[in-house]
Length: 587
Ligand code: ATP
Ligand code: MG
Image (cartoon, rainbow, N blue to C red; front, side, top):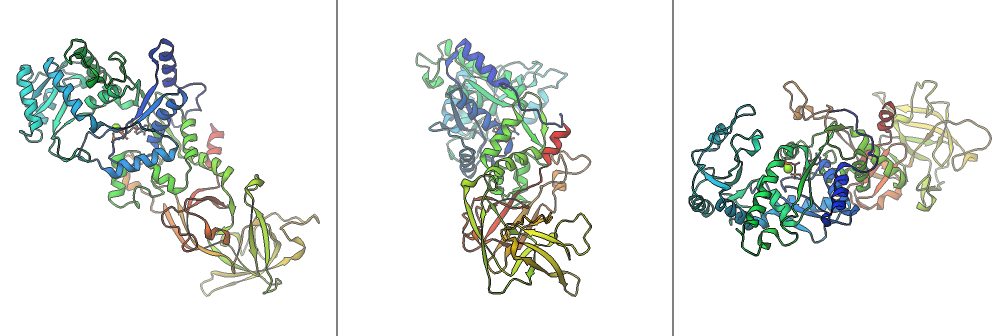
């Protein structure tokens, strides 16, 4: 694994190159059909976004289609909550499967029919060995496996037993249906893999209709075939399973060819393609990102054990977490474009993802003033009953975004960090005797401050220069520092949630030693500041609005807790400091 993300690919990725070739030879006519096949056993994460962008992106590029197929063949861990969240996330990313929404569970009857075909053709058998015995018989990478004593049952006997399996005559794990391939195959996957197992469990869509469920390697390729998929794109860990993918489809096509399905083959092929137009599997490198985990099992653990506030916690690497954090779909798609599609695993720096969201928000997020760690600033020579209203641009580079009105009065809030008692020379912010610019307002000169008994600064005092209205002067005066502020009289109170990395390690999934990923959780990943003051224009902001607090970072009005005109809650999406630019320069 290399540490550097790959340079943006020039030209086409290897999957698109394969598709180009297939179009040239007319392998599928002019059809290009992909699918995104999530198992509804958790929320989607940023790794899934890579697969979504690839599969739906190909469909867009080639005027083809991409199915959304729920790979729901394992009843125990799946749930409709996950189905709904997956649909929401794919739509949010900007992709549309139109009417092409499928569930592998809708094919249960057809999978079963194929299994019976295989039994009749002597390609599958019912095995009575226990799971443990099957493991022992399988052999190792160095040693071949042994045939099960049940391997030579007749098709009639197998058919009868398989039907009993379906009828619920056996308990979980008492029997399995296995493909009859080769117990000495160098590839362990081909040593008579299990096709069906018994599981007396209710399924979220089929209820108690079934007590046998097909295995991934059997169901996935058949689903692809039924739907007329041309290019079945998956991640590298399925490379060893590809020969099995091919075996199942070749076996089925052989059955069809031998007339075993009768004249009408559409019950098996789905009628979308000729039997010969079978899909092929291609593997690409999964996405790994530094500083986080992208394993559903671990993400589920974070949620269920309460280490985070649910699947859409803004610190989670889930799509819903990024959405709530304030990432835009455009920034995630841009990220997926930049990392490219390759055949070798790599680790992508989280900073690249942050860079993408900063770039996007820099272009379109309106600017506002907000003080997160407030201290009062009193303008001594500004009359108590006076007010100014400054019209400030919402975007420094784009006039078309418009302006907003920001009131000014004698008492303001500024950031604590913008004042220093004993300031070094290069501190260009506020300190007694120094002059600074209040953004778009006036030049002010600090005259003094007050402290409480503990030594905390409670109030800063200054005088303003009325001739610098609007925040500038052409008399040649040098004022280096510009600070943001809000009017204490007009400001709205807000809760601001400052998020940081969820993990302290670069590779929390594999931290080494006795540590687990839970030991790597960053205890300071969430800071909630309830006493923030923001300019009044933000009071009516709608949930889900992106914006920038000048000098501070990009934020979003929280989708769940922010109530316009009532309770203001803002999540920090990213700070303004871009660490990616530095990393990229170092190369
Ligand atoms: P598991 O199978 O362990 O539950 P999974 O992450 O593979 O987890 P799926 O729902 O099966 O989850 O994934 C749906 C699709 O997304 C698959 O085609 C899978 O290859 C792809 N995918 C999953 N994780 C990543 C990743 N990190 N990078 C790229 N693609 C991924
Ligand atoms: Mg999977």
